[in-house]
Length: 135
Image 1 (cartoon, rainbow, N blue to C red):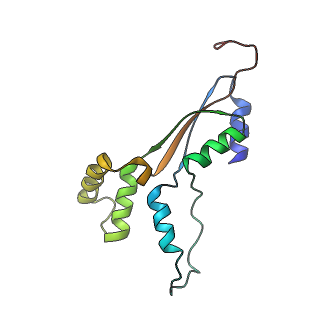
Image 2 (tube, rainbow, N blue to C red; image 1 turned 90 degrees about the vertical axis):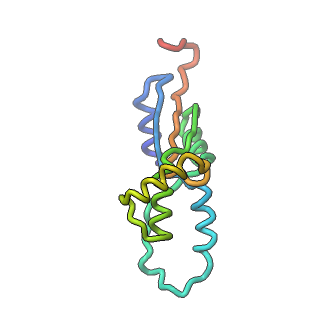
Image 3 (cartoon, rainbow, N blue to C red; image 1 turned 120 degrees about the horizontal axis):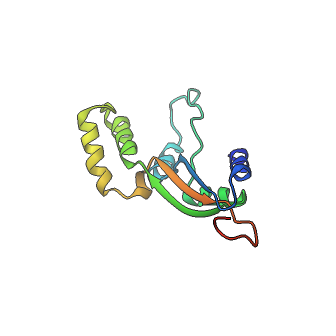
């Protein structure tokens, strides 16, 4: 991700905003990882890398390390994660009306830190020292 952030910092004007979303390493995945790390009889040869996931702390550190001031970090898209959990645990199809209804209802009450699919960050390129906002 470093190269992308370096390029974003380069092309933004001083004070410019970067909006970025990345997969979120939420609490449900952390709990799931505990159980998946236990030895299993199944052959793991078929498992492949899928994606990098970031916690709020990890994403803030990446942005700061590449020169940005972090304005906000917000987990988003709970419903998608809930529907995926339903599919994996019950076989209920993603697009079924029941899965969508359950996702909608649970998405209103489940904490974002537990099951959001993505995390959105808003970060600012620092102003040039001595300049005023809007220059």
